[in-house]
Length: 189
Image 1 (spheres, rainbow, N blue to C red):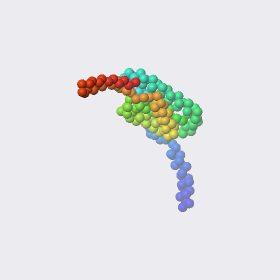
Image 2: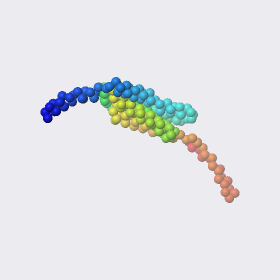
Image 3: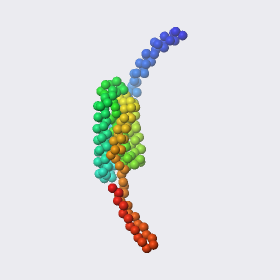
Image 4: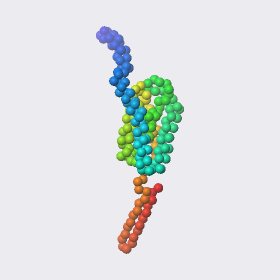
């Protein structure tokens, strides 16, 4: 029995070290995740801008500008105010909230809020992948709390400024009966 205990005590540190060393394939995978997240964070916002231009949505442009600007401002103010160290041990204090996640969820929530779920679901899927890359990327730059904070900042700032897009701004109605005729016009702002 003593030999087994000595063996475990002698082997345990090497097992722990083996877990800390990343294999080349793991490094490539995590680097790929991080690179994907670096670029994909902008996809929902770019899609939002394309939709705004395609629909000639001036009101949507200003709502997007306010919500996206608020997302960036709040995320970076919180990063400097909270000064949370990163999970990888770096002490730059810029871990909370995840800026990549905040940007991705800001664009995704704008698409969903302004143009509907048919645009929001794919955008949220991309934003979710970006959040995953922040946790699983090389050097583990963020933990779950950082990513959740980024989600709240991105979605929250969008919901402050964005209203649903109205396709029809006016409605014309007609009713008749008993020799009477009624024409109605409703305009939605």
